[in-house]
Length: 121
Length: 121
DNA sequence: CAGTATCCCGAATGATACTG
DNA sequence: CAGTATCATTCGGGATACTG
Image 1 (cartoon, rainbow over the protein chains, first blue to last red):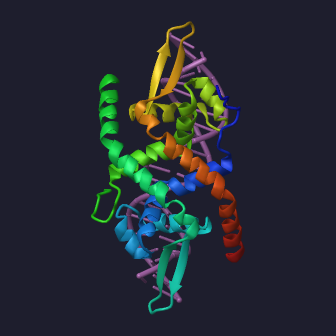
Image 2 (image 1 turned 90 degrees about the vertical axis):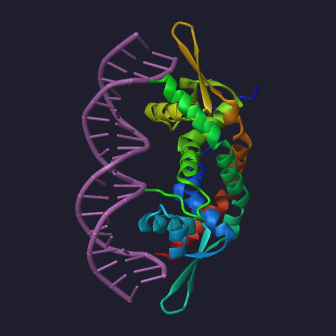
Image 3 (image 1 turned 120 degrees about the horizontal axis):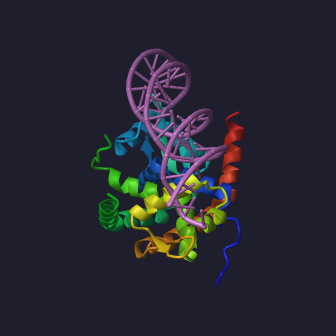
């Protein structure tokens, strides 16, 4: 059989990148921005559970990683638009697949949870 | 607290499931187990950065969610084998795609990070 | 071997207030 | 509008010790 060498398939750097991309908020932000560009407060409304601070933090990290572009529109007051980058766009199919998977499989997972909780009571 | 509003493609339950599946350790555990079943300490060795506690916690959650099966082999001393479930198996292609994506895109991301850090100094 | 049980700390998060 | 700043708190994770 193919042998799994000591050491994961995933280096720390790869793990970090996936962490910073697939976490709770980033996944949703990317999903939203794949549809269309949004302003800061539009994003807040689109993702009701996120706080201002968490949204800012996640957006900065996505921007730093080159996944998202921050476009400042010179109106008064200033408008800031967040736009998916070409790099971010390469995730679109993957994100769609992940969301589809979670929709399809959630019922099955919930049954598994009930069974587990039942057995370990 | 986290209510789902129209516009959010992801309910709290879906977000939670993805969180518990794509987090740092679970992703790697699932990746390993998709290859072959492993014992507890084999997994520890295969994922050198994980601690015993984190591994136990992640495995329990994966088991509860029906992604992984815990098989107790009656030898002396007891052996415990972790095996991917059919439900967990439905993630294999997605996980492969994610790992491939991170491998392909990491250099691009690192360039973006350098550029960002350069500009914001 | 395959865990469980504690203790403990630092990072992540929330609440709140303030600003150009 | 689009944040920044600050403080309080929670909570995941590491270190360590112990067990059937």
